[in-house]
Each structure stands twice: as structure tokens, then as C-alpha cells.
Image (cartoon, rainbow, N blue to C red; front, top):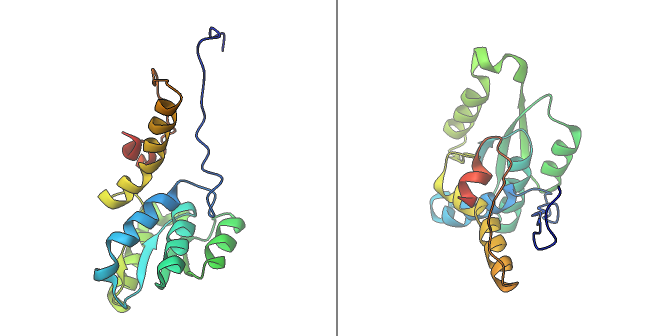
Length: 166
């Protein structure tokens, strides 16, 4: 990048988590903050994979049943990883979802029929706060090295990681 020797670039890797993404942090925080509301009820959520496996891991950790609505077109590894943590997966056709709203309708139906507590993979303060754990780690690691952050670059897809880091 042509930076002077005094400048450094650090990259935060979330591949070390059991689910391979930062989504685990938000899912664990959400689950831990909703345990009393969940009680003996299942948790339902929609996700194309990373939050699915994160929530499934959180469910396994806290002994809660998790039902995930995933697109049929999701990568096979996402199905395998999510199932490996004990989640029940229901699928929908993503190619027509923008017309049918099937993903949201199916998730709501599961919540209604099975008395499930619904979790959002992105539109929830507890999920966002959990995603922010990595940002705190970045700041603490930099301070421990006597360094400051002069520029912070974050990938933005749905915005959950950036919102948490902010």
C-alpha cells in the first residue's frame, strides 16, 4: 500500500469461531439476554447461513431448540454447519422471495404455530451489541500495544458488523 514503516495494518479474523464468522457473537449475546423469555420455547429465525449457525451454536450452548428458515440455494456447508449444532432447518425459494415474502411469512408462521421466540439476524440491539465485541477487542489490543486507530475499515453487507463496531 506504500505506507511508511511507522504505519501498520491489522486485520480482525473471525474465522477462529466455531461457526467461522462474527455472527456467533451477536447470536450468543441475543440468546443470553433472552433466556427468561425463551424459557422452554424454541427460537425461530431466518438466515442464509452465518447467523443460522451462530444461533444454532448458541442454542446448543444454552440448551434451547432452534428453528432456522434458510434459502434452498444456501451453500451446503451452511446447512451442514447449522445442523451440526442441532438446529431444525426449514427452507424457502429465495429466487421469488422478493415477490412472495415467503422467508418472513414462514418465520412468523413457525413463531406462531410453535410458540417460538423470533430472533432477528440484524435488526436487534442485542445482536448488534454482540457483534461489537470484536470492535472492543480491536481497541483493547491496539491500546495494549500503545497504538491508536487512525482509520477503521469494515465490510458492510447487512450492516450488523459495522453497527456493532461503531
